[in-house]
Length: 171
Image 1 (spheres, rainbow, N blue to C red):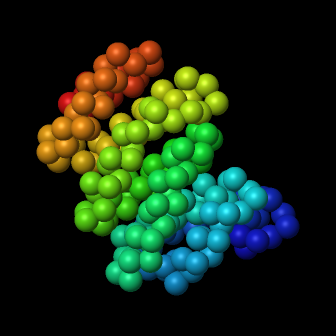
Image 2 (image 1 turned 180 degrees about the vertical axis):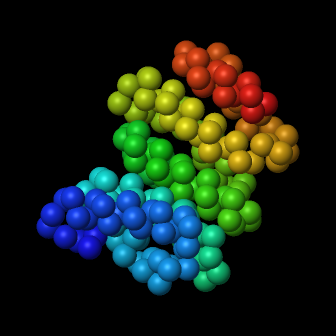
């Protein structure tokens, strides 16, 4: 029960929902509105679960309900909270994979994360690294996106070695 008063129960349920959404999205799609509601829940963990579930449900969203959520998910990239922004980036990368007609819009927003303010500069670097990781699934297409190549080249100078390596590997 996602709305249980017991944290252990609702967080366990949230984790299970992420697994089910990833492996069998058709089992949860009918409950999409619950996950949309959880985007505004006071529990950050449930918000993070909802973001991932929404990304996975985009695989079967023929009604294009998730398309309408993309602007809200993009805004969450600049919410100042690393974990929320990372989960939003993951959801957006899933949506880009499952809905190619949204890819250009999503890509142009993902590569802006270096301009956003997170708690520390290191958090910004972690966020950049997460975006690079999420872009890996599109490796064969990235040559068609000069702005992404530019973003990746810039990260060769990132102070975080893992980000430098990931960017070089993706170029």
